[in-house]
Image (cartoon, rainbow, N blue to C red; front, side, top):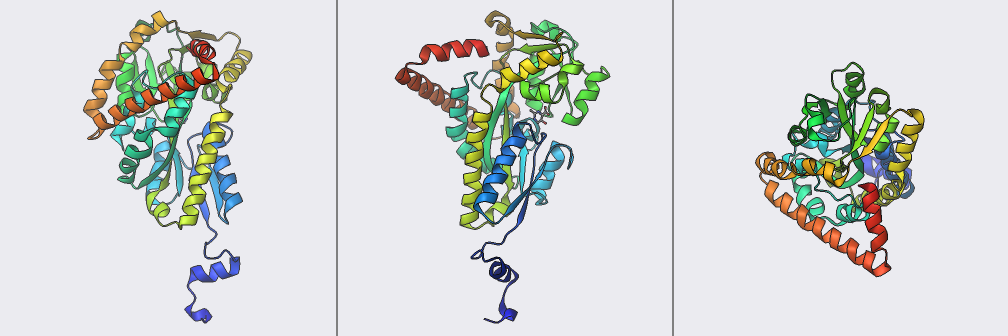
Length: 358
Ligand code: 6CS
């Protein structure tokens, strides 16, 4: 073989001595800052890929490439190889992804929740073809923490949300859900939320405690309400053409890195909610943090059926199949958790934990 007959790839492989795999730089954007949950996940992914291949992963946190909708477009067009976008923004693209906004569908118990995300057939088998239709390889979904409302007025019942312009992610079912809660939902991209609260354009928003703390949402609201209605779900994807074009070896590197990062991010979140709430209290002692009682939650919970029906209307052709499978997966996760509690004798402790978490 002469240099004339060498392809660019084989020449590079010769130079790099990588046995055929070209060392590339992969670009990965996410919706949060480097030290927030999505950033921590991305950093672990990068560390794993770089330790196990010749590739480099370049990370783009929130704000460097635009809003969530922008990074999704960039991933679909192949400018980015990887993107983390939450179903809160994917709902218009993949209507079935709105299922994560049926209130009280996901469990409050962390072990059950993680078991569900790890083993769900809906996530691992039914969602990937729906993402593939949009040019995306769904790599994983993971939870980011209990969602809480932060508002300028106290909220203990749906009546307290009357006339409250409440910011939600740009997801039609989330709009329906907050309508059912009695609020006036206002879909906005993330970058506009702090300013909108500061200027009084909106009077509330929802997010996990770590994000309320790190983005200082407590500065522009006075009440945090734990209604226990959801856990924040996010998803990591690759551009599908890029992923399909990877060697088997590189696919394995990517999949392994995702799996290691998943385990890492689950561990990372242990105690994070309570730590974040403590930091908020320290930074703003006047903040009121209320965990609603079961009785106070009841009217919020009663909206779940109507929102589920709405999901079946607007959740795309696979809505029913996704919902049924999610429910089956959640039941299996709950049964698995109670079995392992029984085995290690920790059922009582788990039940106590549930109460603490609400
Ligand atoms: O509320 C939002 O828009 C943002 N919340 C979190 C926890 N992550 C990213 C998302 O943009």
